[in-house]
Image 1 (tube, rainbow, N blue to C red):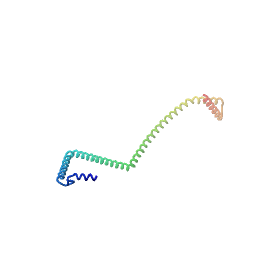
Image 2: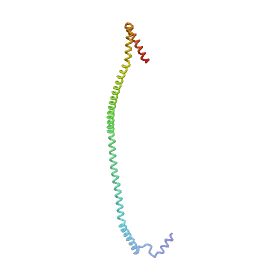
Image 3: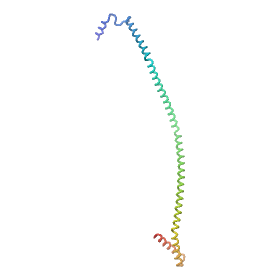
Image 4: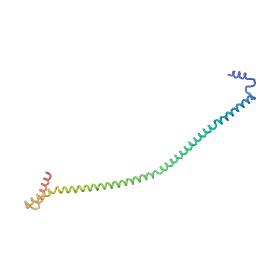
Length: 184
């Protein structure tokens, strides 16, 4: 490798490996001028699109920042609202409990009133049934009472008896009447 470098340096004219002579300065000046022309041309060609792209990017970033700020503000409002609700949950609990008690009391009154009305209807119905049963029993027992009275009168007339005998006859007649009633 050293041999290659030595050979290359020998092929160059004498004194021209690197020198700051007129040819090097002109060549450097041309290259700088080409760079400037290229930079200006690219600046004119690419300036507006790059500027537009950068502006759009800036706008997007600003929009995202604004959205995140508004979202953060909403989140802080929600946090404050929930903290307020948490602090006032005991009051809310008492309010709901009081409403439930009032509703239960009202419902209890309604149920008691309906139960009293139903009890009154049942009582009236029972009284009417009892009255109907009394009338039916009166009608059914009337012939037996008449028959019993007839038997007592027959026995009394057939024998003139004292008080003890009369009680005995009455109980015998009653037993006979009950026996007849069961036979029917």
